[in-house]
Picture 1: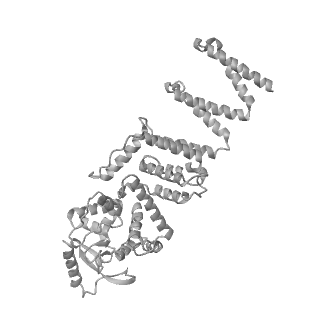
Picture 2: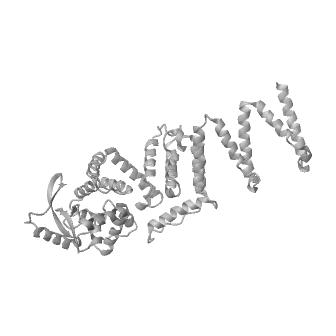
Picture 3: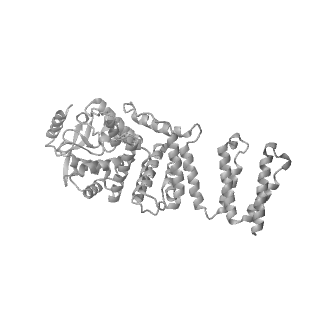
Length: 472
């Protein structure tokens, strides 16, 4: 049934019922006025779904990005929208479907004069599952979607998001919905006026609307960073992390935040953002709360609050990135792009394991998380030294890998740090320790090939000892 036929059929329903006085009346706010509208029983076959319905907006936008045009007037298009609506809230849909089977449709829907469902797409989907020859209780607007898009956008948003008792949108949908409305309003309104309008339509605080728009901007930037532009399904399960990242960037840009390390620059914030984007890719591979270690809270609680920690963390991160194999090209013609991109992100994470059981990204995160903890415990050296000693004791020094030159260099560096610290506080203890080490040497067991070198070094030790004695 095409558009003109739907208009004709729906008008026939209105004409056939114009003299009835027993029809239910329902008030709606239309074009700035509260108006009483009759509720008609419209055959479901006269209706088409709104593919840009706020509940499934991220899904339909993502599909269209893949050049999968959704023709809601076809059976295939209708079936696809119904699947998306069902999958958006499966458990809630099951309960509502049973309620409709038991007592019928309770909430009135709203449609345009050409049968586009403005409010009630989910209810219509459930009614179609029960009986496609049934009816949909609805108010009929005197316009098509194209004739008054802004007013219809307001009406849908007000009904879908402005009433507490309605089923709330999925997390990402509200950000995308705010952006969609903002883009429609700003050609005619200032940015402030547009935000105030969205605030009224959505029933949210103005600051909340600003947060939606700021966060959506970062979400779009993330998708562009990965060449996933417009594939909004790749934002799933990442809302909290995007909210955190948006807050960090708003705080840090401008180089005035006290929550970042001293002397940081906007280029450092750019690097924070790109690293955060990498961690967002494999959000499902680690506890999302760990993401906060990057920059959440006061400066003593995160990596970006300490210059040395941040340099160490970001440098190691970039080293890992350089070692990763080249990523496979994106197949935008994939029959299931969401699954394809999820697999690509997982491969990005798995490649960082470098033939071990643990990702180098996670190791880097954990290593520097401990450093933040050490900074917090800087007034408790006994506890930290005990922990360092226990950690060294846990090393399997008999293992062949312990003999590797790079490992021995690390041991030497560790020892130098200890001696340097000890020398600054108590030279006497350093000498005592040296004496203990010398006494521990088994002279009779010195390898033949080291005797000459040890002889020369013992002469040097004698000279150093004499110089110390002479200066005292």
